[in-house]
Length: 218
Image (tube, rainbow, N blue to C red; front, top):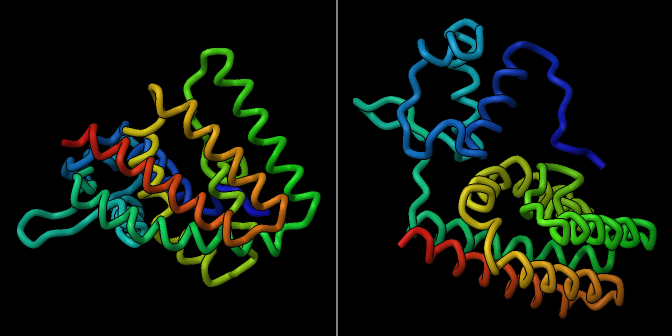
């Protein structure tokens, strides 16, 4: 299973991965303008490398270009959240349904173990922060769908924008414990090979998450 802990091949790859992480985790401010000169100094690379990274980030929907303004990090807005989560609810619901049919017993056991590890961390007072890739509950289910088109749309398209909302606005407070319970029920449905229930529970889980984040944006 591929993880987002990619091994950078070039300086451009390394810069892209680092900028993507910095945007998702808020070290580069949402809505902020991107200066090629400042970023080239920050990452100790040429402006051409920064420009390539910005172009790649635009394909991930983390950066937008506007005439007479230049490149900016996307803003986290109620409207953007609603549109993104409408797509996410549909596609991840489909992924959960397919995962119920296509994940192996061993993969389901690994998913259950992952959830238990997350539970132990939160029980010890740690926030519910999941790195991108294999240690992310949602990523595991996306990959478990075994549908390459769906995986590509989610992981190469909206995955990191979703993570930006989740990391910056959705991983703390009372929502943490209820999200755990929802994850547990989704895994149980997948383990029972009940695709219809898995999809319904995933869609409901994402709707609840959207509502939780939306309150923080209003």
